[in-house]
Length: 560
Image (cartoon, rainbow, N blue to C red):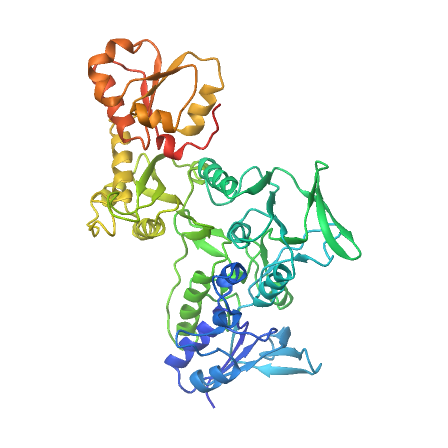
C-alpha cells in the first residue's frame, strides 16, 4: 500500500494538493475530508452568480471541460477518495489518525495517515448583533450562501444593506442591478480601509455614489430590526435606521484553527496556523495551507494574514511536492489583491503609502491617470495608477489601481517587479508590448516610474490631493493655477476664490499675471500639463510651485 495522505478540507488547497500528489506519486493513498458536499469550487465567482452574469451555480463546480468536480470525478480522474459531509473533529498525533464524524449518519471513526494536510480555510466573522439570526440576514462564504441570497432577490428582496466595506462588500455592490436601494455600512472611515490609501478609497466611494449606492462610514450596526421573524432594517450606533429586506454581513473572516490548537500545533502572531517555508507545522508530518495559515510578507519579512484563493492554490502545489519527497519552498506573498465593483476595476500589490511610512520607509509616490489603450482607439477607458517607491533606494514598494480601464494587468507588472526587488529605473526601462489596441506608447507603469524619478531628481514637485484640500480649507493665501482650456473648465469647473486660469499655451507670455511671491499649485486634467506649467514657472524664477499629483482626474473631494 502507498503512502497514506489525509487532507482536511476540499475547497481550494485540498484538491490542489491531492492533484499534485497524484502526479508525483501514483501509488499514494489520498483521502480528502470535507464537511460540505461541494468540492474544488470557484467561490470567488459567487458575487457574479448573484448578479446574474453566471446563470447556473453549477458552473462554479465545473472544470474547464465542463465536468463537475464531485466524488466520482475525483475518484475516476485523480484516484482520490473524498469523504463528503464528513467533519474532522480531532487530530490524534500520537496515533497518526484523524477522528471524523459522518454528518448525515452520525458515525464516528478514525482515519490513519502518514502525512496530514490541514486546509480548513476560514469562516465569516459573526458579530454579536441583536437580530442577526432573523430571516433575511445572510453571509457570503459558500455556494449555498450565494444560492440563498439569489433566491431572496428572486423572491422580491430589493432593499439591500451590506455591512462591511471590505473585499466581499465591495464585490457585492455591483451584484444587485435591480435593487431599489443599496446601502453599505462600514465602521471605519473609508471603504476598503485595509487595502487602499485614503485618496483611492475616496475615489472608490465617489464612484459608488454615482451608482446610487449609499455609503455610511464611521458607524457600527447596533441592532437588526425585524417583524414576524423577518428582517425589516437595521439601526446604527448613531441612532439612524435604514430599511432592508436583505442584509449581508461581510465583516471579514477568521482562520479555522481549533483543530490545530487542540492538537498542540503552533499558532502564529496573526492567530492563524504557523508554518515554515516548506508549509510544515511544528509537527513535521503535518502540513497546512490556504486560508487557515499565515504568510510572510516579502517586502517587510513579517507575518501577515491575507487569505486569497490564489495563495491557497500555490500552497497546494508546494505541499504536494514536499509530502512526496520534494523540498519546494514557499517564499511568501505581496498581498496582491484585485476586485471588481460594478464597472470599476481596483486593486493593490505590495505596501500602501501609509503602510510604507509605518515600516520606516520614506515613500515617494506618483499618481498617473492614463487610458488603458491609445486614446484614439475605440474603447479606450481611463484608470488611475498609484506607484510607490522608497526615496533612498528607489526600490518599488507597491502600487494601487482604480478605474474603468484595464489597470489590473499593470498591477501584475508591478507585482513582478516587486518579486524581483526592482527599482523605479527598472520599471521605467521595461520593454512592454505596444500597439494601439493594447496600450499607450508609454504605458502607465512606465509613466508613473518616470514621475517618481523626476521627483527624486528634483525635477518635479508634487502636492497630493489631501494636502491641497487641507490648504483649500485654510485661510492661506496662495494660487491654484488652472492651465486647462476654456472648454475644459466649462465642462468641469474647479471653483475656489484663489483660482487663476491661464491655458498652458498662453502661460509663457502671461507670466507677469502670476504673483511670484505666493505659493502656486498648478492643475489640469491628468497632471501632465500641470507638471509642464511647474517647469515653465520654475524656469522663470518661481520657486514656490507644485503640481497637483493626478490633477482633476484623481481629485476625490467636492468643491462648491
